[in-house]
Length: 449
Image 1 (spheres, helix red, strand yellow):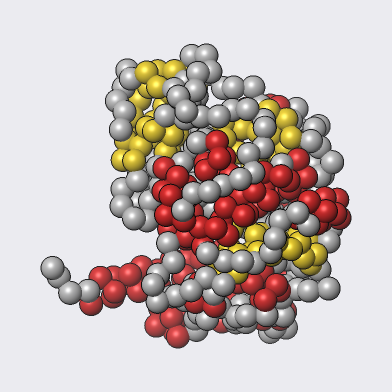
Image 2 (spheres, rainbow, N blue to C red; image 1 turned 180 degrees about the horizontal axis):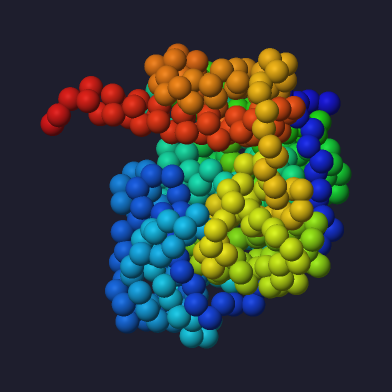
């Protein structure tokens, strides 16, 4: 069975909510919608305090090519266009709306009927995706219309759809693949049409046999679309690892992108959002979020309006368990701990994981024993122990030479370390610093107009 060739680990999957059908979370009374829910420049607000808005209405416009539009997720009154505290306790620009009913903007098709045929030209498809504010929903939040804008010097040969969901605990993509299979497949054909490619591969790990069977049966009706079962191995959901598993092609180090090997990668839930944008004129204003954890009474998969406070999801799952616990935006491997449970759900939030007991504690580290397990586990072929040490010593040139920019921050190094060293923490710091140096260097070398 196919998988990627370098590194990887096998953490316990803990898919507690895999059998729980998607439920619609009751609408919140107030939503807080950040203007930065994507890679690139934050969107610019188009509304002011006191304005009345409808669900699906444009409230913030993309600020440049690498940006994305933002839409109201509920109808009501704008109560603030100001700074709000995010999950990590930092302040960021946001629009707050007090909900009044549930009225939608004109032209949005909310019917459940699946519309299969799309006759739009590629540029028309990309324009509708851009207008809907669709971004990568697997966590990367790369604006989808930018991904589809293939440079003239490159050629897309294959679409890869990421249905791997290798992060422990999370099951939102799994349930989307099961319950919205037709919409997903139509979304795949729309993406193929936009890219001008004839072939698409949907990669799914074989711990989701029901999703593999259902999509494989339905995909037989769609020319050029195949479902490929994959061996379970983390972090197979990383786009470079998935491309290697499905095509055997290796994406070169940054600044190279998947398109440099003729591939465009799209998350499974993003494909459904593309379907809604193109066939239903529906902007990205809601998504499926897993709320899970061993101590929760009812782990669930919830359809949530963007801007809903995370605390509402926790209450829907029975509330926080007794004792100390950690709230993680995402899964335990790549997620970020949250200090503010009132922070909103955003476009890239696929899950909220509640960790308790030993799972929530950071173990006491000891000295590196030079076992090289982190090197064997790294899916990018890096030397995590060395990168971590160089970051501590502020050796930025050595980090750049050591290809720290290729790190995908998967956490395999820290998870495999018998000395419990916080390798990823130091590597993240080093990568952030080196990327800043690279951007400054590029800006200095760019000719002024």
